[in-house]
Length: 222
Image (cartoon, rainbow, N blue to C red; front, top):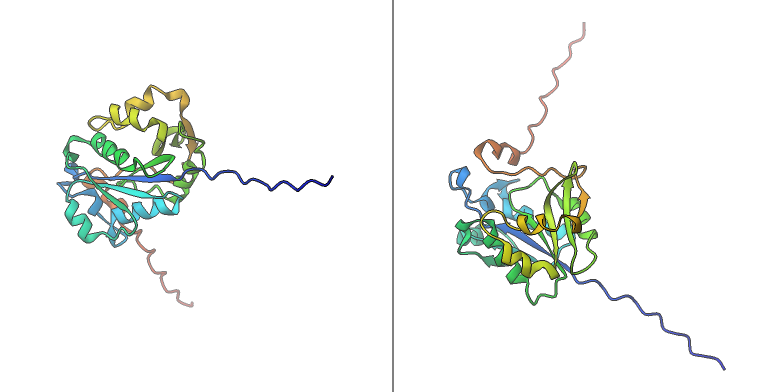
């Protein structure tokens, strides 16, 4: 008897990896200039960071705002992003991380990839590498630079509640990750990104475009 050919079953698609951009900082060491509004390539820095997350394969993208949140909304073009307010932003990064993870509840995201707004040297290539290492709800993945862990960091959804409970002050998820070193997958990104921060006025030069080379001196015939 001829049987009916089995219909191939496609594997279920993986849940999306959400991008979580922490952009609430007030720039205390920058004289009170909110980092989200620093100018980079002619536009607010927060726009660049949100584009990096999308280009690296993240979606949806949630942006946590704090200092000058209303001005960021007015000046920055963030189409398609979910803007999350953290009124307790002066207490440090931990509050922003909690607010961002809370905002992702119910989105169906399988993981959150966290990027800091003040690291413009990290581009879509690094984000994509970290996203590609996602394996499931208990994934913990970190970019690494010369073997030293940094951002972006990916948290599987199974870790969100624990990270939110442990996040405090400016330590963010540091303590939670420190207790789970053996579970973290480190992805080397030093060849495609630079993990510098814009923290003080001495760092602002990194936001400026490189100077063009000087014109060549005219040559004279003997």
